[in-house]
Amino acid sequence: MKRIVCTIVVFSFLISALGVAQNKNKFVGVNTCACHNLAKQGKQVDVWKKTKHAEAFTVLKTEKATEYAKAKNITGAPSEAKECLECHSTGFGQEVDKSFKVEMGVQCEACHGAASAYKAIHNKPENKEKAIAAGMLKADEKTCSQCHGENKMHDIKEFNFKKMWEEIKHPMPKG
Image 1 (cartoon, helix red, strand yellow):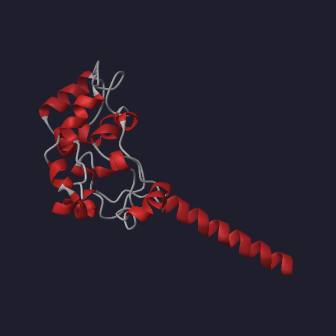
Image 2: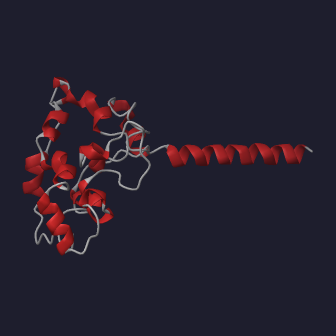
Image 3: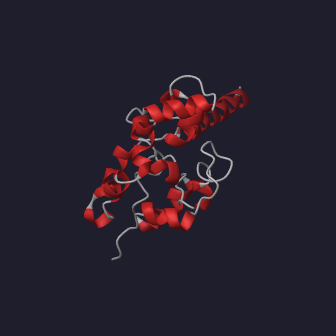
């Protein structure tokens, strides 16, 4: 009997742990990142709003996008097509929080990872390693090249990470 109880306890723990692991990295959306719009945070959300990333989903609703999709044999509206949404939105096909809105385009989490597991801890320097362990990423050329560069849908021949980073960077203020 003791063995059965132990087995049940172990299985219950494993099922619980698997449930947490599956749900730990949901995309929460740019509105959840609003604390990064404070002056002491560098008004990073305002910086994002001025980039093409913020407009990436909206572009899919244009006539030009429809023509492009047809030329690439993509059926249906570009704003609903997997081939387009994989790069023109954040978290396509992934777990998302109820507050998440795909219409917000390429959001913070496209570069920094799904934030549900690290959003509450990442702002404190002493929690940096915990936040990284919980899924927080640092944007780099590898992250960007998932959508930009050779062999991507838009046939971009060259992606200059350093040049493009200058257009979207949003550093924390010093001090």
